[in-house]
Image (cartoon, rainbow, N blue to C red; front, top):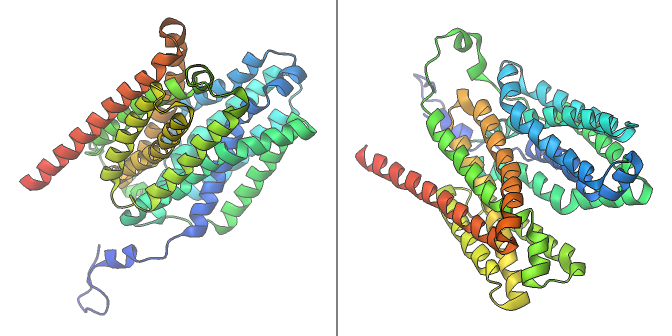
Length: 410
Protein backbone atom coordinates (compact mmCIF):
# COMPACT_ATOMS: atom_id res chain seq x y z
CA UNK A 1 0.00 0.00 0.00
CA UNK A 2 1.33 3.46 -0.92
CA UNK A 3 0.44 6.89 0.41
CA UNK A 4 0.62 10.28 -1.25
CA UNK A 5 2.21 13.33 0.41
CA UNK A 6 -0.78 15.36 -0.80
CA UNK A 7 -4.07 13.93 0.54
CA UNK A 8 -6.04 14.19 -2.71
CA UNK A 9 -7.46 10.68 -2.20
CA UNK A 10 -8.56 8.65 0.83
CA UNK A 11 -5.52 7.77 2.90
CA UNK A 12 -5.85 4.01 2.54
CA UNK A 13 -5.75 2.30 -0.85
CA UNK A 14 -7.58 -0.62 0.70
CA UNK A 15 -10.71 1.53 0.88
CA UNK A 16 -10.83 1.60 -2.92
CA UNK A 17 -10.26 -2.14 -3.04
CA UNK A 18 -13.03 -2.88 -0.54
CA UNK A 19 -15.58 -0.86 -2.50
CA UNK A 20 -14.79 -1.99 -6.01
CA UNK A 21 -17.81 -3.41 -7.90
CA UNK A 22 -18.54 -7.06 -7.27
CA UNK A 23 -17.35 -8.97 -10.41
CA UNK A 24 -20.59 -10.79 -11.20
CA UNK A 25 -19.74 -11.56 -14.82
CA UNK A 26 -16.32 -13.02 -14.12
CA UNK A 27 -17.54 -15.18 -11.25
CA UNK A 28 -20.54 -16.40 -13.27
CA UNK A 29 -18.17 -17.41 -16.09
CA UNK A 30 -16.01 -19.35 -13.63
CA UNK A 31 -19.12 -20.92 -12.11
CA UNK A 32 -20.32 -21.97 -15.58
CA UNK A 33 -16.94 -23.61 -16.17
CA UNK A 34 -17.28 -25.49 -12.86
CA UNK A 35 -20.82 -26.55 -13.87
CA UNK A 36 -19.59 -28.05 -17.15
CA UNK A 37 -16.49 -29.64 -15.59
CA UNK A 38 -18.43 -31.38 -12.81
CA UNK A 39 -21.15 -32.44 -15.26
CA UNK A 40 -18.54 -34.07 -17.48
CA UNK A 41 -16.98 -35.81 -14.46
CA UNK A 42 -20.18 -37.46 -13.22
CA UNK A 43 -22.18 -37.99 -16.45
CA UNK A 44 -21.09 -41.67 -16.89
CA UNK A 45 -23.00 -42.60 -13.70
CA UNK A 46 -26.28 -41.63 -15.39
CA UNK A 47 -25.51 -43.47 -18.64
CA UNK A 48 -24.18 -46.78 -17.30
CA UNK A 49 -26.48 -49.09 -19.34
CA UNK A 50 -26.10 -47.17 -22.60
CA UNK A 51 -22.31 -46.89 -22.41
CA UNK A 52 -21.74 -50.46 -21.24
CA UNK A 53 -23.88 -51.83 -24.07
CA UNK A 54 -22.24 -49.69 -26.76
CA UNK A 55 -18.67 -50.37 -25.56
CA UNK A 56 -19.28 -54.07 -24.72
CA UNK A 57 -18.12 -53.78 -21.11
CA UNK A 58 -19.82 -54.21 -17.74
CA UNK A 59 -21.60 -51.39 -15.95
CA UNK A 60 -18.99 -51.65 -13.19
CA UNK A 61 -16.29 -50.83 -15.76
CA UNK A 62 -18.25 -47.75 -16.84
CA UNK A 63 -18.55 -46.76 -13.19
CA UNK A 64 -14.78 -47.00 -12.94
CA UNK A 65 -14.54 -44.13 -15.44
CA UNK A 66 -15.60 -41.77 -12.63
CA UNK A 67 -13.04 -43.31 -10.24
CA UNK A 68 -10.28 -43.07 -12.87
CA UNK A 69 -11.16 -39.42 -13.44
CA UNK A 70 -11.09 -38.64 -9.69
CA UNK A 71 -7.89 -40.61 -9.08
CA UNK A 72 -6.17 -38.69 -11.89
CA UNK A 73 -7.21 -35.44 -10.19
CA UNK A 74 -5.79 -36.63 -6.86
CA UNK A 75 -2.33 -37.53 -8.13
CA UNK A 76 -1.83 -34.73 -10.68
CA UNK A 77 -3.47 -31.50 -9.49
CA UNK A 78 -0.63 -30.44 -7.15
CA UNK A 79 2.26 -31.33 -9.54
CA UNK A 80 0.54 -29.64 -12.50
CA UNK A 81 -0.11 -26.53 -10.41
CA UNK A 82 3.57 -26.40 -9.46
CA UNK A 83 4.66 -26.85 -13.10
CA UNK A 84 2.37 -24.05 -14.32
CA UNK A 85 2.92 -21.63 -11.44
CA UNK A 86 4.68 -19.00 -13.58
CA UNK A 87 2.14 -19.04 -16.41
CA UNK A 88 -0.48 -16.26 -16.64
CA UNK A 89 -3.73 -17.44 -15.11
CA UNK A 90 -6.37 -16.32 -17.61
CA UNK A 91 -4.77 -17.92 -20.72
CA UNK A 92 -4.16 -21.06 -18.64
CA UNK A 93 -7.85 -21.27 -17.67
CA UNK A 94 -8.79 -20.89 -21.35
CA UNK A 95 -6.36 -23.65 -22.32
CA UNK A 96 -7.62 -25.98 -19.59
CA UNK A 97 -11.24 -25.50 -20.66
CA UNK A 98 -10.27 -26.30 -24.25
CA UNK A 99 -8.46 -29.48 -23.15
CA UNK A 100 -11.51 -30.49 -21.11
CA UNK A 101 -13.69 -29.89 -24.15
CA UNK A 102 -11.44 -31.97 -26.41
CA UNK A 103 -11.36 -34.76 -23.79
CA UNK A 104 -15.16 -34.89 -23.75
CA UNK A 105 -15.30 -34.79 -27.54
CA UNK A 106 -12.81 -37.68 -27.65
CA UNK A 107 -14.97 -39.60 -25.17
CA UNK A 108 -17.99 -39.14 -27.41
CA UNK A 109 -16.09 -40.24 -30.52
CA UNK A 110 -13.99 -43.05 -29.00
CA UNK A 111 -14.70 -46.42 -30.69
CA UNK A 112 -13.44 -48.53 -27.75
CA UNK A 113 -13.44 -48.60 -23.97
CA UNK A 114 -9.65 -48.27 -23.87
CA UNK A 115 -9.75 -44.99 -25.77
CA UNK A 116 -12.55 -43.74 -23.51
CA UNK A 117 -10.28 -44.43 -20.51
CA UNK A 118 -7.45 -42.47 -22.18
CA UNK A 119 -9.84 -39.56 -22.84
CA UNK A 120 -11.03 -39.63 -19.22
CA UNK A 121 -7.44 -39.51 -17.95
CA UNK A 122 -6.80 -36.47 -20.16
CA UNK A 123 -9.97 -34.88 -18.79
CA UNK A 124 -8.87 -35.63 -15.21
CA UNK A 125 -5.53 -33.92 -15.81
CA UNK A 126 -7.28 -30.75 -17.00
CA UNK A 127 -10.00 -30.98 -14.34
CA UNK A 128 -7.54 -31.11 -11.44
CA UNK A 129 -5.62 -28.10 -12.72
CA UNK A 130 -8.88 -26.22 -13.37
CA UNK A 131 -10.03 -26.74 -9.77
CA UNK A 132 -6.67 -25.51 -8.53
CA UNK A 133 -6.92 -22.35 -10.63
CA UNK A 134 -10.54 -21.31 -10.13
CA UNK A 135 -10.73 -20.61 -6.36
CA UNK A 136 -7.47 -18.64 -6.35
CA UNK A 137 -8.59 -16.69 -9.43
CA UNK A 138 -11.96 -15.88 -7.83
CA UNK A 139 -10.13 -14.72 -4.69
CA UNK A 140 -8.03 -12.29 -6.75
CA UNK A 141 -11.15 -10.77 -8.33
CA UNK A 142 -12.61 -9.64 -4.99
CA UNK A 143 -11.62 -8.05 -1.71
CA UNK A 144 -11.04 -10.21 1.36
CA UNK A 145 -14.46 -9.26 2.75
CA UNK A 146 -16.17 -10.72 -0.33
CA UNK A 147 -14.23 -13.99 -0.43
CA UNK A 148 -17.04 -16.15 0.95
CA UNK A 149 -19.56 -14.60 -1.42
CA UNK A 150 -17.25 -15.14 -4.40
CA UNK A 151 -16.41 -18.74 -3.48
CA UNK A 152 -20.11 -19.56 -2.95
CA UNK A 153 -21.03 -18.16 -6.36
CA UNK A 154 -18.19 -20.02 -8.05
CA UNK A 155 -18.96 -23.34 -6.34
CA UNK A 156 -22.66 -22.96 -7.14
CA UNK A 157 -21.78 -24.33 -10.57
CA UNK A 158 -20.78 -27.64 -8.99
CA UNK A 159 -24.04 -27.87 -7.04
CA UNK A 160 -26.09 -27.05 -10.14
CA UNK A 161 -24.16 -29.71 -12.05
CA UNK A 162 -25.37 -32.39 -9.64
CA UNK A 163 -28.92 -31.03 -9.39
CA UNK A 164 -29.41 -30.05 -13.06
CA UNK A 165 -26.40 -30.80 -15.28
CA UNK A 166 -26.14 -34.56 -14.77
CA UNK A 167 -29.92 -35.17 -15.10
CA UNK A 168 -29.94 -33.12 -18.33
CA UNK A 169 -26.94 -34.93 -19.81
CA UNK A 170 -28.50 -38.25 -18.80
CA UNK A 171 -31.81 -37.34 -20.45
CA UNK A 172 -30.00 -36.22 -23.62
CA UNK A 173 -27.92 -39.41 -23.70
CA UNK A 174 -30.97 -41.60 -23.26
CA UNK A 175 -32.91 -39.69 -25.92
CA UNK A 176 -30.36 -39.40 -28.76
CA UNK A 177 -27.42 -41.55 -27.67
CA UNK A 178 -24.78 -41.31 -24.95
CA UNK A 179 -22.12 -40.00 -27.33
CA UNK A 180 -24.14 -36.86 -28.03
CA UNK A 181 -24.22 -36.06 -24.31
CA UNK A 182 -20.42 -35.81 -24.25
CA UNK A 183 -20.36 -33.91 -27.54
CA UNK A 184 -22.81 -31.37 -26.07
CA UNK A 185 -20.65 -30.97 -22.96
CA UNK A 186 -17.59 -30.52 -25.20
CA UNK A 187 -19.36 -27.79 -27.19
CA UNK A 188 -20.31 -26.03 -23.95
CA UNK A 189 -16.72 -26.13 -22.70
CA UNK A 190 -15.31 -24.73 -25.95
CA UNK A 191 -17.89 -21.93 -25.90
CA UNK A 192 -17.05 -21.36 -22.24
CA UNK A 193 -13.36 -21.03 -23.09
CA UNK A 194 -14.24 -18.41 -25.72
CA UNK A 195 -16.43 -16.49 -23.23
CA UNK A 196 -13.63 -16.53 -20.64
CA UNK A 197 -11.16 -15.28 -23.24
CA UNK A 198 -13.43 -12.35 -24.16
CA UNK A 199 -15.10 -11.34 -20.90
CA UNK A 200 -13.15 -12.62 -17.87
CA UNK A 201 -11.14 -9.80 -16.32
CA UNK A 202 -7.40 -10.55 -15.99
CA UNK A 203 -5.85 -10.54 -12.54
CA UNK A 204 -2.49 -9.24 -11.39
CA UNK A 205 0.00 -11.79 -10.12
CA UNK A 206 2.43 -9.73 -8.12
CA UNK A 207 3.62 -12.90 -6.42
CA UNK A 208 4.86 -14.22 -9.74
CA UNK A 209 7.24 -11.40 -10.55
CA UNK A 210 10.76 -12.34 -11.60
CA UNK A 211 12.15 -10.61 -8.54
CA UNK A 212 10.03 -12.78 -6.28
CA UNK A 213 10.74 -15.93 -8.26
CA UNK A 214 14.52 -15.34 -8.08
CA UNK A 215 14.57 -14.34 -4.41
CA UNK A 216 15.66 -16.85 -1.78
CA UNK A 217 12.64 -18.86 -0.66
CA UNK A 218 11.70 -18.89 2.99
CA UNK A 219 9.07 -21.22 4.34
CA UNK A 220 5.65 -19.62 4.01
CA UNK A 221 4.12 -19.12 7.45
CA UNK A 222 0.66 -20.04 6.14
CA UNK A 223 1.64 -23.55 4.97
CA UNK A 224 0.85 -25.30 8.25
CA UNK A 225 -2.54 -23.62 8.86
CA UNK A 226 -3.56 -24.45 5.27
CA UNK A 227 -2.51 -28.08 5.77
CA UNK A 228 -4.63 -28.26 8.93
CA UNK A 229 -7.65 -27.01 6.95
CA UNK A 230 -7.00 -29.52 4.14
CA UNK A 231 -6.65 -32.44 6.57
CA UNK A 232 -9.95 -31.34 8.13
CA UNK A 233 -11.53 -31.31 4.67
CA UNK A 234 -10.32 -34.85 3.98
CA UNK A 235 -11.66 -36.16 7.30
CA UNK A 236 -15.08 -34.55 6.84
CA UNK A 237 -15.39 -35.66 3.21
CA UNK A 238 -14.39 -39.25 4.04
CA UNK A 239 -17.16 -39.38 6.65
CA UNK A 240 -19.75 -37.83 4.37
CA UNK A 241 -19.04 -40.00 1.32
CA UNK A 242 -18.67 -43.21 3.33
CA UNK A 243 -22.40 -42.75 3.94
CA UNK A 244 -23.61 -40.76 0.93
CA UNK A 245 -22.15 -43.24 -1.59
CA UNK A 246 -24.47 -45.88 -0.15
CA UNK A 247 -27.36 -43.67 0.90
CA UNK A 248 -29.72 -45.27 -1.65
CA UNK A 249 -29.64 -48.77 -0.06
CA UNK A 250 -29.92 -47.10 3.36
CA UNK A 251 -33.02 -45.16 2.33
CA UNK A 252 -34.62 -48.20 0.69
CA UNK A 253 -33.69 -50.57 3.55
CA UNK A 254 -33.77 -49.14 7.11
CA UNK A 255 -35.75 -45.98 6.25
CA UNK A 256 -38.24 -47.75 3.97
CA UNK A 257 -38.32 -45.24 1.11
CA UNK A 258 -39.93 -46.83 -2.00
CA UNK A 259 -37.42 -47.20 -4.82
CA UNK A 260 -39.63 -45.06 -7.05
CA UNK A 261 -39.14 -42.14 -4.63
CA UNK A 262 -35.34 -42.36 -4.40
CA UNK A 263 -34.79 -39.75 -7.12
CA UNK A 264 -37.12 -37.37 -5.25
CA UNK A 265 -35.27 -38.00 -1.98
CA UNK A 266 -31.91 -37.29 -3.63
CA UNK A 267 -33.34 -34.15 -5.22
CA UNK A 268 -34.43 -33.02 -1.73
CA UNK A 269 -30.85 -33.50 -0.54
CA UNK A 270 -29.35 -31.68 -3.54
CA UNK A 271 -31.89 -28.86 -3.47
CA UNK A 272 -31.30 -28.31 0.25
CA UNK A 273 -27.56 -28.24 -0.49
CA UNK A 274 -28.16 -25.42 -2.95
CA UNK A 275 -29.96 -23.47 -0.22
CA UNK A 276 -26.99 -24.07 2.08
CA UNK A 277 -24.71 -22.64 -0.60
CA UNK A 278 -26.88 -19.50 -0.73
CA UNK A 279 -26.65 -19.16 3.06
CA UNK A 280 -22.87 -19.38 2.79
CA UNK A 281 -22.72 -16.43 0.42
CA UNK A 282 -25.21 -14.30 2.37
CA UNK A 283 -25.78 -14.99 6.06
CA UNK A 284 -22.31 -16.43 6.73
CA UNK A 285 -20.31 -14.49 4.15
CA UNK A 286 -18.46 -12.61 6.90
CA UNK A 287 -19.01 -15.16 9.66
CA UNK A 288 -17.17 -18.15 8.22
CA UNK A 289 -16.11 -19.58 11.59
CA UNK A 290 -19.65 -19.42 12.97
CA UNK A 291 -21.04 -20.91 9.76
CA UNK A 292 -18.58 -23.81 9.91
CA UNK A 293 -19.39 -24.63 13.53
CA UNK A 294 -23.16 -24.49 12.90
CA UNK A 295 -22.89 -26.42 9.64
CA UNK A 296 -20.82 -29.27 11.09
CA UNK A 297 -22.97 -29.49 14.23
CA UNK A 298 -26.19 -29.71 12.19
CA UNK A 299 -24.62 -32.31 9.85
CA UNK A 300 -23.79 -34.51 12.85
CA UNK A 301 -27.22 -34.03 14.46
CA UNK A 302 -29.25 -34.59 11.27
CA UNK A 303 -27.30 -37.68 10.20
CA UNK A 304 -27.60 -39.08 13.72
CA UNK A 305 -31.37 -38.54 13.55
CA UNK A 306 -31.45 -40.16 10.11
CA UNK A 307 -29.48 -43.16 11.38
CA UNK A 308 -32.25 -43.90 13.89
CA UNK A 309 -34.98 -42.95 11.36
CA UNK A 310 -36.44 -40.59 13.95
CA UNK A 311 -40.01 -39.61 13.07
CA UNK A 312 -40.58 -42.29 10.45
CA UNK A 313 -40.61 -41.55 6.73
CA UNK A 314 -41.36 -37.82 6.88
CA UNK A 315 -39.03 -37.28 9.80
CA UNK A 316 -36.30 -38.97 7.80
CA UNK A 317 -36.98 -36.67 4.86
CA UNK A 318 -36.63 -33.65 7.16
CA UNK A 319 -33.35 -35.06 8.50
CA UNK A 320 -32.17 -35.69 4.92
CA UNK A 321 -33.00 -32.10 3.95
CA UNK A 322 -31.18 -30.72 7.01
CA UNK A 323 -28.17 -32.88 6.19
CA UNK A 324 -28.11 -31.58 2.61
CA UNK A 325 -28.58 -27.95 3.70
CA UNK A 326 -25.88 -28.01 6.40
CA UNK A 327 -23.38 -29.99 4.35
CA UNK A 328 -23.95 -27.61 1.43
CA UNK A 329 -22.43 -24.93 3.66
CA UNK A 330 -19.33 -26.84 4.73
CA UNK A 331 -17.09 -27.17 1.61
CA UNK A 332 -17.43 -23.51 0.47
CA UNK A 333 -16.84 -22.24 4.01
CA UNK A 334 -13.75 -24.44 4.38
CA UNK A 335 -12.48 -23.28 1.01
CA UNK A 336 -13.09 -19.67 2.02
CA UNK A 337 -11.12 -20.21 5.24
CA UNK A 338 -8.31 -21.77 3.20
CA UNK A 339 -8.16 -18.78 0.83
CA UNK A 340 -8.31 -16.32 3.72
CA UNK A 341 -5.50 -18.18 5.50
CA UNK A 342 -3.12 -18.74 2.56
CA UNK A 343 -0.71 -15.98 1.60
CA UNK A 344 -0.86 -14.52 -1.92
CA UNK A 345 2.26 -16.46 -2.89
CA UNK A 346 0.83 -19.75 -1.61
CA UNK A 347 -2.77 -19.46 -2.83
CA UNK A 348 -2.43 -21.50 -6.04
CA UNK A 349 -0.54 -24.29 -4.30
CA UNK A 350 -3.02 -24.18 -1.40
CA UNK A 351 -5.92 -24.56 -3.85
CA UNK A 352 -4.18 -27.57 -5.40
CA UNK A 353 -3.70 -29.18 -1.98
CA UNK A 354 -7.34 -28.47 -1.11
CA UNK A 355 -8.49 -30.06 -4.39
CA UNK A 356 -6.37 -33.12 -3.64
CA UNK A 357 -7.73 -33.40 -0.09
CA UNK A 358 -11.30 -32.99 -1.34
CA UNK A 359 -10.96 -35.78 -3.92
CA UNK A 360 -9.09 -38.01 -1.47
CA UNK A 361 -12.08 -37.55 0.82
CA UNK A 362 -14.56 -38.56 -1.90
CA UNK A 363 -12.64 -41.63 -3.10
CA UNK A 364 -11.50 -42.56 0.42
CA UNK A 365 -15.03 -42.28 1.78
CA UNK A 366 -16.44 -44.50 -0.96
CA UNK A 367 -13.66 -47.03 -0.29
CA UNK A 368 -14.22 -46.95 3.49
CA UNK A 369 -17.95 -47.47 2.99
CA UNK A 370 -17.29 -50.42 0.67
CA UNK A 371 -15.04 -52.00 3.29
CA UNK A 372 -17.48 -51.49 6.18
CA UNK A 373 -20.69 -52.36 4.33
CA UNK A 374 -20.31 -56.18 4.32
CA UNK A 375 -18.80 -56.17 7.82
CA UNK A 376 -21.07 -53.84 9.81
CA UNK A 377 -24.02 -53.33 7.46
CA UNK A 378 -25.47 -50.19 5.94
CA UNK A 379 -26.88 -49.03 9.31
CA UNK A 380 -23.33 -48.36 10.58
CA UNK A 381 -22.37 -45.94 7.79
CA UNK A 382 -24.27 -42.88 9.09
CA UNK A 383 -22.60 -43.37 12.48
CA UNK A 384 -19.20 -43.32 10.75
CA UNK A 385 -20.26 -40.03 9.16
CA UNK A 386 -21.27 -38.62 12.54
CA UNK A 387 -17.98 -39.61 14.21
CA UNK A 388 -15.74 -38.16 11.49
CA UNK A 389 -17.86 -34.99 11.26
CA UNK A 390 -17.46 -34.48 15.02
CA UNK A 391 -13.69 -34.98 14.64
CA UNK A 392 -13.72 -32.20 12.02
CA UNK A 393 -15.82 -30.02 14.33
CA UNK A 394 -13.35 -30.51 17.19
CA UNK A 395 -10.45 -29.46 14.92
CA UNK A 396 -12.35 -26.35 13.77
CA UNK A 397 -13.21 -25.39 17.37
CA UNK A 398 -9.60 -25.92 18.45
CA UNK A 399 -8.34 -23.65 15.66
CA UNK A 400 -10.94 -20.98 16.47
CA UNK A 401 -10.08 -21.01 20.20
CA UNK A 402 -6.36 -20.89 19.45
CA UNK A 403 -6.89 -17.92 17.15
CA UNK A 404 -8.85 -16.07 19.84
CA UNK A 405 -6.14 -16.69 22.42
CA UNK A 406 -3.53 -15.33 20.00
CA UNK A 407 -5.65 -12.24 19.34
CA UNK A 408 -6.00 -11.57 23.06
CA UNK A 409 -2.25 -11.98 23.59
CA UNK A 410 -1.57 -9.44 20.82
